[in-house]
Length: 292
Image (tube, rainbow, N blue to C red; front, side, top):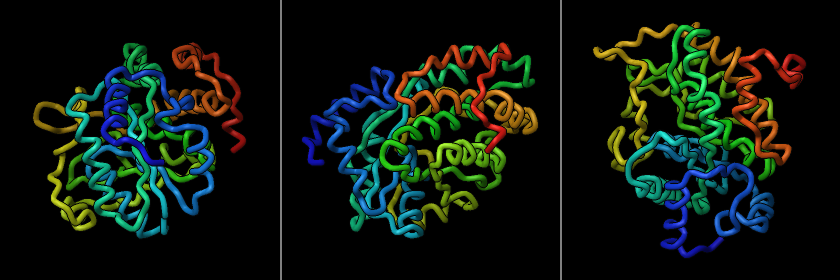
């Protein structure tokens, strides 16, 4: 998979700028059918969710725990990020330098702003009325895991490594509670994909630094989100009810996301907005969720 790195990164940056529908149909210059076939023959590969330093630390720990031979870095866009694209490139370089014994394949990007909007944007007023709160963060993290599931299946049901953590030195994150992480795991499992959370019970930043063994300050050198901290009050506290968040997952976001992912796996570009609207209208299609 040799590429002209400079030209390739320019093309990836262009994708990040335009944010097209890009989940199952990849341009040949990014991930050709031949490259996909080659990847399926690899001994012990995995997808790595590229975000901040936790995602790289998660990859390092997963290699140690699972004997992974090949890692495919995958960045997923949402439409709410801002910052320098080079921070994503830098994360992959740090991953390569930390794991010289593992083949780190060229970064690819995926995303569907329409998918993201269907669960986090268009129906905010109705979701507030129904669930007594709204924050895009729980649905966004669900999207970020789900958007890689069709690719993981395409490559032979390979695992996806994520840097999700329940514990953040006493800080509460409503999108990373134990219940939220279990929801993410359940969605992946429904499609026979293992979602790996090797950092799940790590609390202190010092532990992340010990895994990385490289200088990388917390919350630095990564893209940021315009909604960061939106569910916190001015004093930093969180008043959102976890019960309401869990209802949002169970009654709306999970079934909507499952149907959208199902369409991608069938080879279709889903009508994400229509699927979301149908669930809010009570017109739920039968995905046999209760038979699992």
